[in-house]
Length: 316
Image (tube, rainbow, N blue to C red):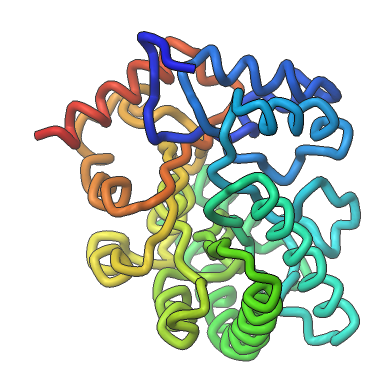
């Protein structure tokens, strides 16, 4: 479908409107097509019921699939959800189940002609939701407050102590999954995604190390711009210095803007800042898969305006 609003190579995540189409997959996709997108990313909340009407649209060539988001389709078990240890499980049975689910996501991607599967690799677990506690202090007292700095130091000490063990498990799982996919002849990349909670993995440098160690296996970085901005503001890493180091490993991007610590907004539009997002344009330009991942509050008019601004800046 080509329209005056045609978005070309850019893709669009179903996270934008899935809550408005709880069972109507075809309606959800048609809603996105009206924005001018030829391709979609099927996110982790897409159900088997959605796929019943989406798959005929894929087969007829009415919509392309750029990527699917593990775990796909929707899995209700929180152990294998988006915020879990997942590929880093030390329990071998759970790790095997997580790998099976990722292979299932890759099978769907292969069937739909998608280029990649977006993966939340895992996290360093805490007894409490330390990320939520930090964000509350951030909003109420600020990042420079004594309360924030004290809790941050506790978080980073525990994270640093435990991260390497979980990283090794994640890398092992990714390697085994890629080997299994290669035996099946699937040409589907895995993109390990920058995350939105400070105890989650990977940081940019963790991602770089995994990608280097698994060179040739089909594992890359999926650079989520909004999440990376959020983690930079909280203090986990520095995009200004680290983005250039991971740029060669980026396969896909999630395009959205973070306002304070709220993400999934339209770049340039909702912040009103005409400059700050410019530093992420090289990542968008580099990425082979470019996906808008926006919240329902983003209107079609905002989406079009944001996209046009990005295109105009990239053209300079």
